[in-house]
Amino acid sequence: SQIELDPGSAEQILLDGKPQWIVLSVEWIGGLPFDQSFDRNECSLKVCELHESAKAHKLASESTQTYSLYDCLRLWGETETLSEDNAWYCNKCKAHKRAQKSLRLWTAPPILIVHLKRFAYTTWSRTKIDTLVDFPLNGFDISGYLGSKQHVELKATYNLFAISAHYGGLGGGHYTAFAKSPWKEQVRDESDEMDFADSDTGWYHFDDSSVSAVSDLEELVTPAAYVLFYRRIDL
Image 1 (cartoon, rainbow, N blue to C red):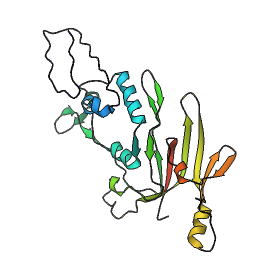
Image 2 (tube, rainbow, N blue to C red):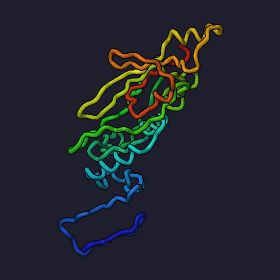
Image 3 (cartoon, rainbow, N blue to C red):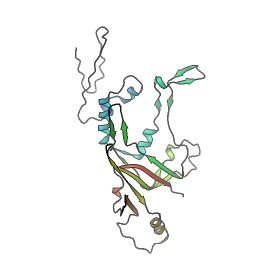
Image 4 (cartoon, rainbow, N blue to C red):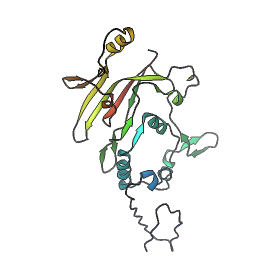
């Protein structure tokens, strides 16, 4: 028999007898974000497993979205319930429990390197993730994501000084780099008499043997950004 459910339906399905096989076919609704068309939280609890088509749909929907670097930190630190296969043994209960875990930055290092996950691997495919991550060039404050109890007293604000970018896909790609000149930054701070052009951002693009000045800072924040290099502002 065939049962059709309307989008967003919470109807309970009752099956006659005890069928040996159940085939579930999900037709994605065009334009609907993955999180609204499939319950990712239930899948993480091992109620169901994501089919390869669902994984592909998730990647396709995310590639059209834009996230901030703060969104990435928040998602990275979300509490996760371990699966039954990764159950934690509780010495007090003397039993394996599906514990919860979360990740935190402990302290604010002098140099903070942020590696964005740009490549996804499944059983049947390998995909380049081209989601745009909007990251700050200055004033990146991570104090709210630190696990140390002394985080209130720590300097936890950063300015960007370099970017590693990747263009292309898994079949073939090209790496370039962007970097901010420390000399020009120092001169700007120490001298008000030197005349700088409005288009002089202090940033440069390094592409193999070619080096060119970056006239528009919007050239930095693109889906090609792969690794971000931040320096703490008190240094």
